Figure 1: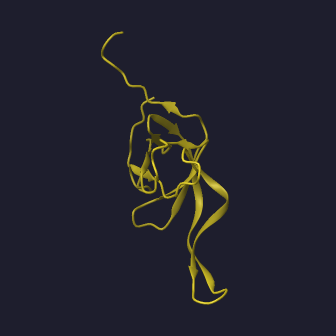
Figure 2: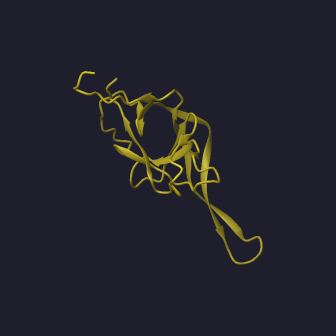
Length: 142
């Protein structure tokens, strides 16, 4: 299936999905939730939920800040995510209960910790189906 790319005004076109998590003891899997911004100057975040886990090379010490994939929207506004050699088709879903993103601020002294609300997450991009491999076509006959 060929997806036609279209710029949608509410979203940053062709957003890269970057890792913002530090690696745990298990060096071959990443968590299945990621956050993206709707626009470069927006404080609204959208959750990306993947089915399963992402595997990566064991020789990588840290994936923090690394590009994990590419996200775009089709003409009918369906999200498509390309990760490595795989394509995932998804959909935009409203969260049953909104999530808050908060920043912990620790002041001097005992019990002076405060939390500042950064934004509220109301929607997520859900990629719940199996990924489809990207097939390389060759002009040579076997």
